[in-house]
Length: 296
Length: 276
Image 1 (cartoon, rainbow over the protein chains, first blue to last red):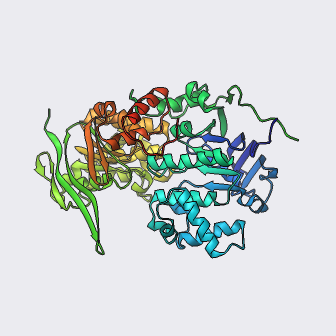
Image 2 (tube, rainbow over the protein chains, first blue to last red):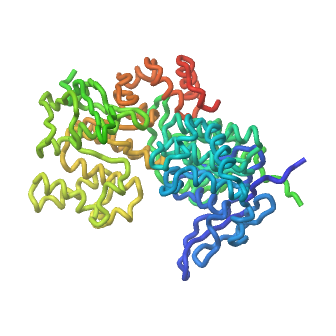
Image 3 (tube, each protein chain N blue to C red):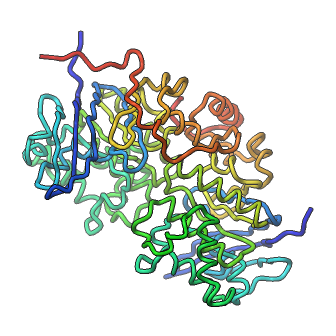
């Protein structure tokens, strides 16, 4: 039996620009993430991975300068042409973790007020005391040593790692069905980053949350994801299980990426071009990674 | 062994403000050989950037001393030392003046330090750009029109303009994509060998260290934890903290995973770190 994936993106095209000066950013992106699945979308800067996430979140809307076609379905809600009400309709069922936690938090309010606001977006009548109790529990869950003190802090008083945990706690507080994490912890230390990934992994395992990780770091992807999409300049180039991709990458671009990464086992650096026509070759889908069955 | 280019003896830096004291660096003694690429590794708050600032003379130590070519480095640097010790920063966009052309940015140190004749400097700029793999016509362009990798090449050319002996590289490739990073690292390696440069390579990325460094010094909360040749440190890390750091590196090959797991097994790992 096939369940409809939590998130399904089909043939997504995106262009920015006006008055005939269009620049194409996405050229037909398709991907899906099922309940409890950890999927990664990996690519370099400018590949289109972050705009894909923004479109899926409803943070980027069709406008005179933004032209999107194709389909993004989240639990039966169509996001591409959905208009501004998408954000309201998907409500707290989709959450996003951003790259830089300190700039994602409001610098002029203490964490306490921001956390109450997040909780009240799901339950408007929540009392202060109950909201604070839940916020403290959520902060304790992400291993913040003194939750009460964190609530009374401004973002700038906490370290980057602490802010990241606060962001995660907020994102998870309303138990989302889909979590999109855009380079979480890239600005943080490796040990903090490992903890962030562990938290997200636990969430997928225990609550069946669908997680879409957007990353440029193949090492992080290897540790975290079940399945991987590789995106290059607005096109998917390879789709595989994590095991398949790292054991036997088949697309020239993926192969170049993997060999360009410095290894702790040594071996120096390869002589590789930054760009090559080979990187533009069509999508390679590994066995068992096809499109999900259509659900009517 | 050649005479060391830089020696740190009991170096320390304590910040004090409003009755708060923060010890950023404490009792660091290290010797750096000429011509090496010396990695300084640690997480945020380890003191690695403070160390860089002290070596550059951007701040004065509160304890100990530094010797450069066996001569004590003064707190207030003269032009000679400022020219001999250069910096390449992490973010090349903020390091380059957006209102200056690339050529003007690379030329500035030539003018300041009166290197060459004023008529010869334009040619020298073209030469420096070529040296880092950029066409001479980049001199007319603005940093905004360049990619991250190209900007970092400009920053390297500007540092080279001073004909320095020591370059402090503060996370020079952490903002770059991996394919670009590989090329910039190769460039740095070639320049070091060809010009007999010495690098102080500040980074949090241990895989980059393995690829480019000759020695590594690991810092934790302002203290030197471990120091040695790069092969030795990866073959048999002595300190628990070093093992933890290597154990937390996200790896991409089976060979790396085996090495990392062996290193992990040698030390109690923190609860973090998802299973591979």
